[in-house]
Length: 179
Image (tube, rainbow, N blue to C red):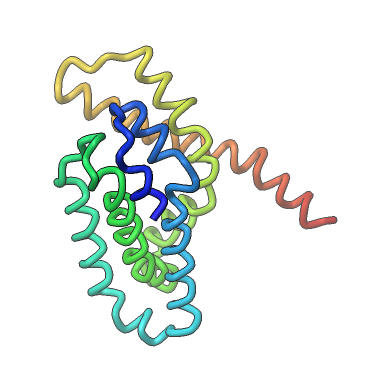
């Protein structure tokens, strides 16, 4: 409702990002969808497990749809429903992702577990530390170079985040647990 109430504000791409995408108050529904997913898993676990495949397909559909509807900074959709569409899509993926921890495919399980552990570190380093350094120092001239820089971005983000998790975040959590 808050996003709808401020949707008449005229913005460009920068101010759309500042006024809508990066404001906690305009994104509280994303947390609500996460709480809804936790509620379904805890209180309706049979539904959670039984319908995980169709929720996966529906979630991918929501996310693909959100990619192909143009985001014009001043459109009502991009200021309001776009965020909910992405959040609902992500919520619908959680049930299938939750089942991965019980999979026999140990390499997938290990990758997902590691990314889950370093996700906060990835959040901290991905834009300011990695993306901006790559953007300021490298300019892609061809499609191949764009792919190379994209792979460099993800590799650097995962490597730096792994070190940050192992040498700072995990020791701090261990210290916290001792008190």
